[in-house]
Image (cartoon, rainbow, N blue to C red; front, side, top):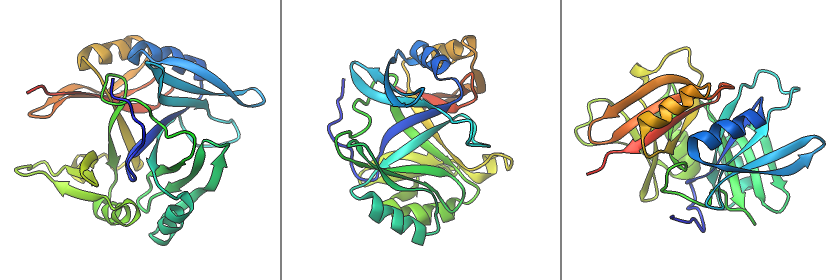
Length: 259
């Protein structure tokens, strides 16, 4: 069980589900990933649910407020930074839209929410007492994220300025998939525009590691989820599926190819 003590700057450090039915989400993801749920009060009639594996935080969930119009159920990614205010200011200069200015989350950390110049939304996290995800490398943990955008060049320039990410094409890759390199670690990618539906809003798609992609996809469908992309294999990479949970939040599952 690889435990996380600190997240490298520029890495994905937290994953959070905004949903219309928190209790249903608990049942669905517990059955899918074996997460246990711990609720923490966050206001009158509201709780913040921590999803845990082996007693370590793996993800979280909250109920979308009815006064927030037009925001569907979704998974939101957080990126680790040393200073949320500095990075937010840099994001605005680089063309981002500020959705939530930096604010303190009790003594856990400081965060902001931005929309990149191509339209995808991302959160920034400056850890204090809570680093975010505390476990990695086992089934049920965040393992990757794809950026769906109609303008990879603009997005690449923005994230290079913001987090010093590098977007790279693998050798002998005719597909055109770009890998996101943060420091010395590959953390995600950008699929080619030619395979992207023009009607899909820009977004980040999180991937969770699983032991058996087909079994988990089947379980998701049997539990009320919808297979947007049934399990498929990528030669030399692994097997994956894209799923919408019963409330409509979209995520992917992935099983790496063993060598």
